[in-house]
Length: 295
Image (tube, rainbow, N blue to C red; front, side, top):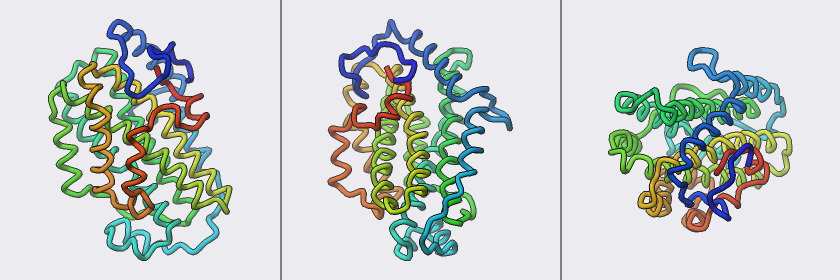
């Protein structure tokens, strides 16, 4: 994996422990990786220079989806899941794209607002944590960018339902002992979901290679980040927390599929979700493994 230090396990795994003695060196290496990946990292209007450049290039991908798209029906479904029945399965895939990271981005905003009052911003760990939170804003922009191929403009800001707001609020105020195990479980669940979407997009748009490639590259770009986020949160979780993470991840996955039913409409059923139990790093695409930071 890109620029990573030697793994602490013979078989790198989401669930392998990291020795406390190696933590600071790994954090520093990850910070250096983020600098190379993101470029100049500013939290003002300039953002991350290399991510802005990537978005600019992606905006020039001008392939158009060859199929009927009803923008008004799409936005009705964006506002209310009951309207999804009026969309084609390809339009449902786009809707899932638009919503996939919205919940996480909302969660990051809430959690950061709470945690910035409780953490020491001078410590390397919390500095890196802040950078990762800002990366999530790019994930939302990367995914929404896929609408350019369908001639759809998303109207209004997405509003999370009460169930999701309560779930995120519980995480934001969770004691430190529980916070990072839950967050790690959420990141692993997110990697699984994006990997599943990557395969599903390949199936649904196999006859339109240019559109398929754009959507796949967007998911790969996010997966590269998310693998690093998993590695980072492993640095904060001790052996006891790590032993609970696999079951937590399954619970998070079911929670997300319940609060974002578009996944089920796209085909994420119980059989597919059951694959999370055996899901691990080596199942990701070679490009993701080559580019991502993981130790």
